[in-house]
Length: 192
Image (cartoon, rainbow, N blue to C red; front, side, top):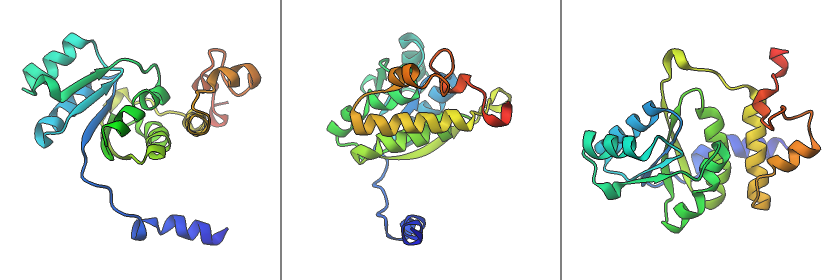
């Protein structure tokens, strides 16, 4: 067991470095995230995928008119309904496009959960994610450990089964999930 722990901790020395970033993946839900992604796209010349973001009119104005990006550089994707589906709805498209490294843009208070879920789902397809947190200032609401780890578990189960088992968990593990099926609606032990 100690050998496995040492191997994991030393991975920075032997694990190959990711290729240069090929894409900017922004998780929708906050206009500041999209603004930061637009700035990065202009600076680095990378394509952008906005998952579950603002309305198409605002996004088009921001990326094309305000930042001057060509229309083909930005893809808007509205299939996601939560953090897990931000990744599951796109990961196979990214793999088909031969994306091996993406910059992940989301709010700083959402980054821990997004990165855990993303590294499990995208990592299962060989895609490396580099975090680009967007400061949320006084709007930050730290996410509880339970929400972070339950979404990580959902991601791992999705990798194994190809399905989001949230509905099954809501039916069979009602004490673990809140009344709306969201692990975040049940207070963490520290909050009780």
